[in-house]
Length: 165
Image (tube, rainbow, N blue to C red; front, side, top):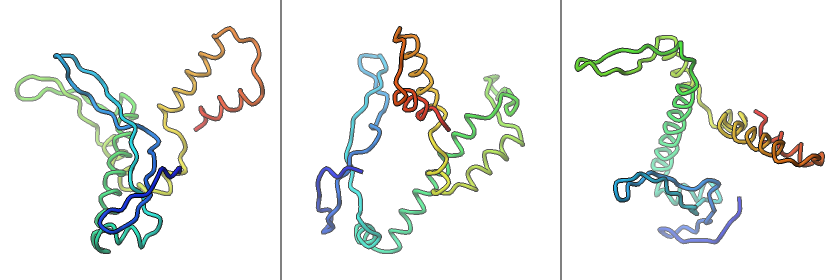
């Protein structure tokens, strides 16, 4: 974590930290959709006491923590849902005849289990996501097909480390 400065918010001095990934969203300009990204810096507390003070009370601090837990559990469930095999889905039609996908009971149980068993410590230890590993594998493939005939041990280890689960 690199501290880029300090800011005072409601009487609390907070570190300003550049976030690892930019904020991104889709916008429509002239009828065409574009993805825009902005690198941001955000406030970070140095201690539990500073965070509680920032939140205004211990109850608000608890509320913030529970909100973060719920959001992270939903994100874990979303990843689990996306990674289910095709056999975990059933195609159906609604009353108007529009097709949609539903999840089987086994698939739903798997997703529910991922949400219920979410813990911050296990998330931190599970390693890079499938998307990150795929991007690293693409990087390795591009390096190999670049025409470069030799790679140093350090280059190879760095490339493979990014692709490891």
